[in-house]
Length: 385
Image (cartoon, rainbow, N blue to C red; front, side, top):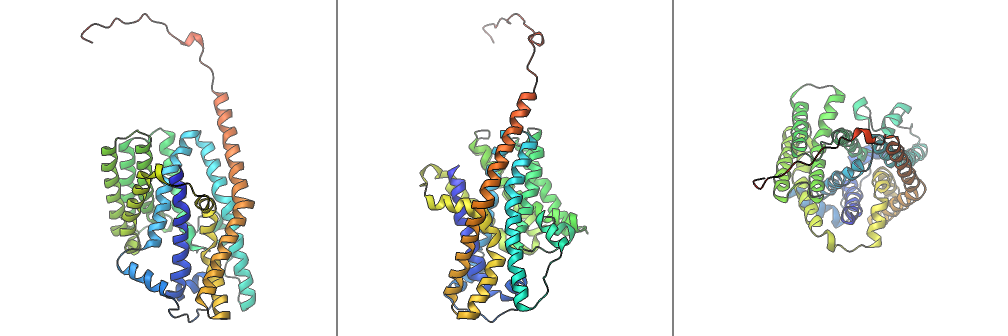
């Protein structure tokens, strides 16, 4: 679906612009903690941070809205993969879609941190266990820090994959009651995370459950698009699932980030619905296609590496615009290289491997025997019937 692919690039650029054009300059202690460098005095060197602050003050967090669009796109497109083959082929496909690129981007992040630590005379900030926890998206469950904090959203995706695959395995994902039941159950888990003393694993499962509810909105759009649910029924389910998301966001385990995602989630749903409605009229621009292709690695290499580059260029030149240009250019270049040498080849390999698994599974099914067919005389149908 072109409209879903076209959403990815602009949404990712919004996230990058918020992190590099706003957070680094207005929340320097946070950026310094992520980048593991001494905080620097940056002031307010350009009008853009003021614009972001104004929007945030009006409860319009465009970075959060862009991330919510990513979640909606996942909910819309992942059911296609689930419907194409076996459960095993789905997880093989997801593994090669997710992990090789994740590992390549982590290596770039770790390389930047190692070089910076050497130049600053500091110790390397992470150990082997931290790296392993990040490499398999288990860090919060193991009480370990994220090396690149944006990875938290991938842990949400992982949880959605598991729940959606289990539902699809039993052919339940197309049932209205199942999607609503999942939304209610995940909301209950989020509420429990806020009001019951839970361990690290259970709390973070509750935290991630809130955003899986948001992903389910994309699943609803998928079922409407496939014609399985009527538009009126689908609209009702959308409102019910959105209500579950808002309840879990404001009163669940994610209460601390409610202001960032409350209005943003509803706004993202509106933007997604508008683009879905206009899907046949959206122009297919090659730039948008390319941005959509490199979105995944761009999302993972821009923040930590970008903060390090911003600091170096700012201290060397004192120019906001040179620092932004250098950080953006480096992020795009790294993302393009990772996509070309890792993301695309491993994705293609996973697709081919999953296709072979589906073919073998189909070949292994026994053909029906003629003796299994019971022939009966046709039943006469009366006029009343």
